[in-house]
Image 1 (cartoon, rainbow, N blue to C red):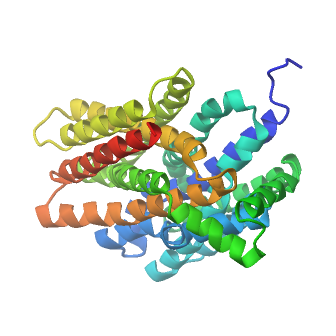
Image 2 (cartoon, helix red, strand yellow):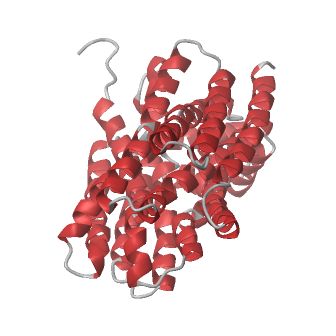
Amino acid sequence: MKPDTDPHKFAAYCVIAAGVAAALHIGKLPPALPVLQRTLSISLLQAGFLLSLVQLAGMSLGLLTGLAVQRAGLRRSMAAGLLLLACASALGALADSASWLLASRALEGLGFLWVVLPAPGLLRQLVRPQRIHRMLGVWGTYMPLGASLALLFGPWVMRLGTTDGGWRLLWLVLSVLSGALALLVWWQLPPDRVSRADLMAASAAAHAAPEGDRDKKLLGLTLRSRPAWLLALSFAVYSGQWLAVVGFLPSIYVQAGVVNTTAAWLTALAAAVNMLGNLAGGRLLERGIKPTTLLAAGFLSMGTGAMLAFTAHLDPWLQYAAVLVFSMVGGLVPATLFSLAVRLAPSAAAVSTTVGWMQQWSATGQFLGPPLVAWVAVQAGGWQLTGWVSVACCVVGLGLASKIQSELSK
């Protein structure tokens, strides 16, 4: 074994695979939306909430779940989240109404949260310190990779189904996959003794306070942290616009007369190129590029790309190229924010709660973004104003990046 080889390298990639499996449940909906609108009589506004309701748990429980994850153990929490995703997806496959499907999506959101919150802390334990930036950049690809795989293979799986356009089969396949990964995570990851050490660190930081007071102090430490707020709000303005633009692409293309299979391929590529930005972000941080430079580049590219993508009378291929720029360079943002979360957390024991707070605001952005874009599209009679929603998010993101730079300079 080479000296710089991580002893738990395979376990680290199991963590990333778990994140991808969780993201598949987010990405399975866009290719199924046209079928669901037809078979369950779902309106455009209901479709927007179907895209975003999976984030309800993260929007309301992110910080508390981050604390619960720290208490329960990181490996245990990730495995439980995968099992919950498996059960929720199986229940969703039985839905015969929009309300049932909405309820199952909310349950999937809770499972998603229990999978992704332990991941940065687990990776910090599993890889060497000199490789953490790169591995967190790889972790940042879990959402675009899962979304693109779902967009690409979702229509193929649905074509194998025999009822209701095949969407129920897709839900069941992902249920089985999540259950299998829960077993793999439990088998491959080391026991949760490291998380108990983190709890001992939390106890020392809280001056050996009783357990209940220790939890309150850890929550208070996170909520009083200005960097934690800046990172969380930055994630919100990034994730809300990304999910809104990529999530509605299949519907936009189908409305424009593009064949459903072609629309799926185009959307999958738009989601997949986000991985390049995440990977590049980890490498550039490792080489000493300033985090706020990467944040600024990401937000500027997203705003510009969205404006060009939804400009009327522009050549369709130029519009699609703008979507690719929006997603690819925008991928610098999550990679940078995950790295900053480990760096700017108020204490080593507060990494999970800091990531939980980020996830809570990321989920808030993803919950509000698609319905907002759908509402603007309904009011405008088309998608031509969507770019302005993205520009507004990016202006806020650039302002937050400047505040983060002030924190890094202290």
